[in-house]
Image (cartoon, rainbow, N blue to C red; front, top):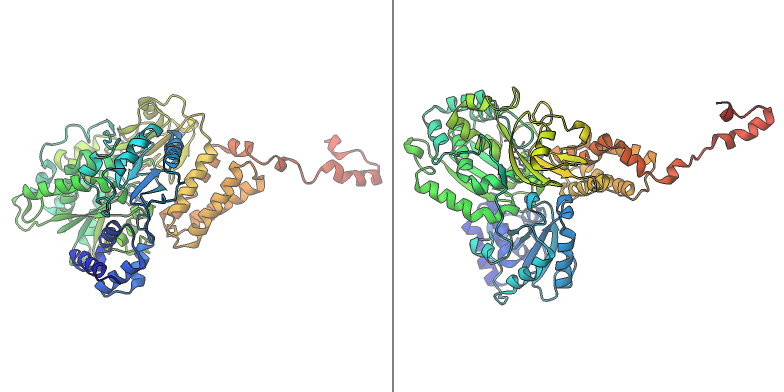
Length: 603
Ligand SMILES: Cc1cc2nc3c(=O)[nH]c(=O)nc-3n(C[C@H](O)[C@H](O)[C@H](O)COP(=O)(O)O)c2cc1C
Ligand code: SF4
């Protein structure tokens, strides 16, 4: 064991306070210092933390962004989604393969490059996209590939691995790294944002209970998808007993087709941090945690810059806004590539440095969350809404939208349409209205609220975007008439196979069986009885899975079966239509014996 390695790892562990709950940070640092989390590194981390190596191994083996073997110096991760494929990801992939002489999942012989596919990276409006050493590149074409590879070869490779999280310099060195703003249409929430912390200052003029009352009166509901009333969540958290109370901002945004939280963190970070600080005040908390998905590591520098600026202005730290006794700060926790960590209890596990397996509930996070203390977990958009509610008043918010769905919704539109991007849409608008706005004239269907949502056929385009009709986290993927609905359902099912945490059998095994069943359907080899058994299996996975991932994993299949039964029927194996039992033949002998006319003819 090299003394250098021991020393360096000890230093990394010490730099995170020798705190086991900072395991994600320790492993991220090790991964990017050595290009892998080796078995030796795991032993050394365990020794430095006085923990068993199994504990470290458990976390290290869970996340897609930790490698247990060395890979290439430069990591090219291309986004693999139905939308990226419709926009030409396959051709970009081929250009990389041809230029490097290796396939996806492989590393070049000189150890310079590894090619990998990855799940949606939050750029569905700008596909094909990729993460190159953590830097996001968008709207790629095969013609971009030589320049990207040349930039990665310059300067001449040294032992030092690329910086992580990547900074502005790393991004500037790569072509196609200037991502355009996704905001196409701002409404009341995002138009005319305040120049200062107006919402926070308004909150500090109230008591914490009055702040919660304002949020309750606004009828704000969680924008992460489930729509839980935010005022109630904050009240439950505040009244739960604990030595600390936490606010955790869920910026995991892993649902394919969603990218509004990236937009908010990029273009409106102060509104997000105002919302977190308001929540911290309302809950009686001293620390806020922003859980930032690993795919958004390139936002690290700008977000840390915004936090530093807030500390300088007295908007974070002791006695915020001159309010003595209100001390609050925010820490950003990077994830490492796991969709399940968007599920709130898995997010808590990850925040505590563990693998992202969902927790049993109750107790709910409002009672026992981060480090066993009461924790409110809110989506990024929810917190932005909270900041504006405090600034403009609950009545302003309820004047927007419908009776049961106040405010507006950020819709992330991608796929077959003229103008993809984020549209701030009033609750109550129909899908038809949204399709008109984005220039989708001939949608065959809309995958609404992502793969875990539903496939909505044109007959339902008159339905409303609202909690009381079509609830959504925002993902809106449009598929034109030229797209293969069933092949797309298969791709979404594969996504769930890849992202299942593996904890429970119905999801771990069920999603794989569903994928196999769907492969048979797409290949035209399924019979009517296969379809029936697939539906029954899907139903079992929904009912028996432990958490929301497994419970919604069959949705791409179930909802396309419901919306497009004729497509499944048309793809059935021809053999299915050749009756095993031909009535005429079966009855012939009996008819001859009895001397009766053909029953079939008689009918
Ligand atoms: C598999 C799975 C993934 C999820 N991913 C996210 C996510 O990326 N962002 C998010 O805000 N909520 C996500 N959720 C919902 C969260 O569990 C939780 O309901 C939400 O963060 C609460 O915030 P809200 O009340 O502001 O919506 C996910 C849920 C499941 C089951
Ligand atoms: S349903 Fe899937 S993701 Fe959820 S606990 Fe079970 S295996 Fe894990």
